[in-house]
Length: 371
Image 1 (tube, rainbow, N blue to C red):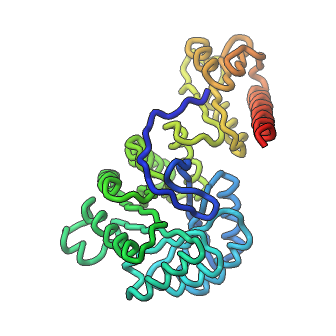
Image 2 (image 1 turned 180 degrees about the vertical axis):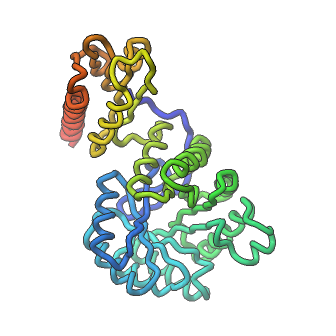
Image 3 (image 1 turned 180 degrees about the horizontal axis):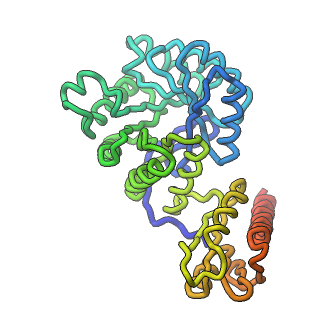
């Protein structure tokens, strides 16, 4: 059963990225970034649609050239998710994607050049209701800050961010969010904690260049988990050297583990031991792959024996307890049916989908009654 998270979130100013609210009391959003060649419109659109199917709230697209900007315009017309354009140095690219329907600009105002150019970009963002993300990265700090601090430090990241923020403050533009990313967990966490006390804008969390699927998931879970437990964070990206869809899955799994967001199935599964009455690991591997398309929140317990099984199963929306000769299914805390090992995955998937359909029907009924 779903329980509210005990985490008290930092109160931040709320901004908008397309139709997604970021900050304030809005749910923490999960995003990813395309890794296709932006000028390959077909491939980029296909990847964005896969990210949407995985539950992503928004997607960032790199726009390094004017040619890529024109491709971005065609991509924008072909997808529904809010799109963030990742732009460095050339303010004309920012102006062009603003015309083409971008929802957020990932820029650093200090890298755009003269103040009149920054003013043009901010004016375009203001006129078209486009938000901005100031993105500070330990790997690309300004040269004078590298010289001042000797190496990237939390204080250096914060000072860099405050420089860019000051530019937007002078232009009276407050519709922005901030990220201070580092591949080092301690540096990133310290920087975010410091900036969280100094500004009211929403914070975009990320441990940059975290690593491959396994190592990057662990590093991101540790770093982002520490910040989220502090109530810090309004949107996040898990940066993995892997399929971007995996970034979305891991992002939601992190939020689900802290009860900050519910999307898809939350599995409670035992690691298995000699007490198990069915192949728990094999069942879980097959089941996770089969129900990957389900976005409706549901707690599902899969426990191999009768020691911990009944207790876990009763607490979940749906639970399976290993037994002999058959395994007992609990629904909403009550025994409901028994399943045989011979086609356990097939039967369990059917039970899950029936429960999901029932839950979705109940939600539609509630909405209809409220209208």
